[in-house]
Image (tube, rainbow, N blue to C red; front, side, top):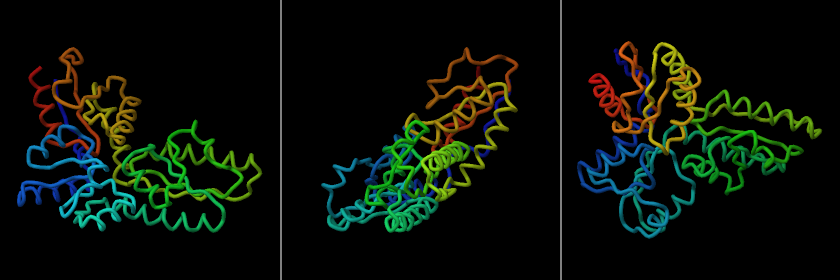
Length: 288
């Protein structure tokens, strides 16, 4: 049995930056607050907790004063910055540059749509941290759709501009935009749907690379935290390419009966999966 780790898997640059920023502060002060899980991987969150990282929710954040709080790669809505200013909280902003650019574009798009009685639509996961930050750029008025079944939230007789959560699958985004176009025409709307390819290029290219990786192995062990939106998207892509794809979040979940002696095993993961965890799982599989 051979075991190979996908060299393109592991943390994206936005997550790497956020974790590096946290580690630098913890090395100096041994304590740092983080608004929400720094990354959607429970094992990495626990590692940083041991170093002194304290994960807080929004209610706890509102009651903090005169301290430092890390903003993770997902970004935050304007309300968070307002609270920080009022409570004299120093924000260590590790928002991913890709997300920051998207927030700015959505804010401009919302102003334009406001003038034309139009709608801003975001294709993404309702309640996801990044999506919350994006919706915040529209004073909470953006329409979030996560599937074709949710398109009835849109008024197809009005102008529509649509963006995608950065970690969404681009092919699924195209499917959504095509369907909205059809429904706008069916409603007699002669306006063209304004689309914005806001999916992260690093994530998009990883999807194509993963497809090739999965086809070249007999069995795939996909490592991802249960909360990772990106992990769910990438796991489904792997599963489509290789039916012998198994999802695990930690070493204890790997089962020996999945493997055959002749297997060429591939290990890959989400943008929120640490490389050290995939390496740990690879070493364990080699002993089977």
